[in-house]
Structure formats: C-alpha cells, structure tokens
Length: 192
Image (tube, rainbow, N blue to C red; front, side, top):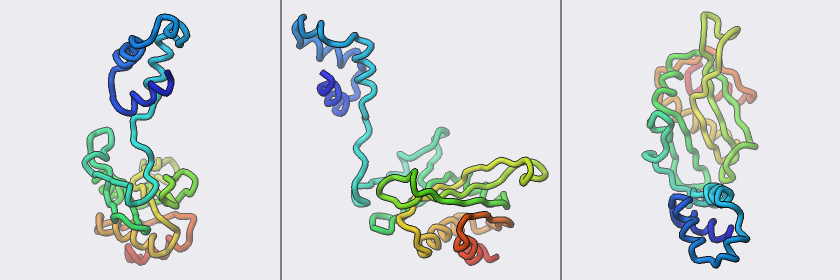
C-alpha cells in the first residue's frame, strides 16, 4: 500500500481522503483490516515528494524566473549565466540590491557543505544595518545568494561583476571576507 500511495502522489495531487478512499475501495475487507488507520495513511500520502527529482547535470537544471519567487511574490532569481560547467546562479530581489546600494558595510562568505550537488559553493553577501553604530548593535541582512561551480578567481570576478553591474552606485566602505582574494576582487570591481 505504501508503494501505491507513493506512486499515486507522484502522479497526481489529489486530496488524500479521495486518493486513499479510491485505493482502499479496491481491497477486500480482510486486506483493509491489515492497513494502518486512516490518519496514518493520510500522513504517508502527504509526506510523499511532489517535487521532481534533483537534476544530475546543468543541462537538466531548468530555472524559470517567473516560478522562483519569495513570499511577497517578488522575483528571486536574479541572474543565471546559462547552461554549462561554469554556470553561476544568483538569487536576490531588487530590494536586496537596493540595500547593497544604501548600506556601506558588507560581509561575505561561502560554504561548501550546504550547497546543491551540481554546485561547489553557496556564496552569500550580507549587509550590516541598524542604529547609529551598526558595528556595535547592528543586524546582518542577507542580500545575495550565489551558487558557484568552483572556487576559481575567474568565477568570483564574474559573480562580483554581475553584482556591480546591478548596482553601479554601490560603494561599500567596509568589506569583510575570510578570503583575501575577495578583498582584491572587490577593490577592482568597486574601485577601492
């Protein structure tokens, strides 16, 4: 029954009550008596993944900006370099980019552990906001999320160029990053 529920859920998005009712109507009374109770069956049905499987290549990864939105229905896919081994995908809203223009203290770092399998790194850019002295009582605001294919300098340069082109008036006064090459790249991109 579990396998049948999985298959049905992947094929349709039926109401759990309807789907389970239709499936159990085909069973004999003795077979029904061996099933878990209705609540457990509904939970099993609801838990099944309705999303397609994760892509295994950049060619399979299809991103549609109209379908990638955040809670307020604003577009979140900011940039996609396109299919290929050096693919860069950047997520941000227009509002996030405006924050980069307004705020002058940026912090950036990457992680290699929490990243989709096709990519090497999730790189984030945050801005420090709040109060007259944000260094003492400020808050970090995540503004940009970038999925990067590798750790090459060329990749970082391309990512920062996309960000700079999106906000040509950005002039971060302070930039903190664990990587010294990021400092150099940012200096080149933003004229420091």
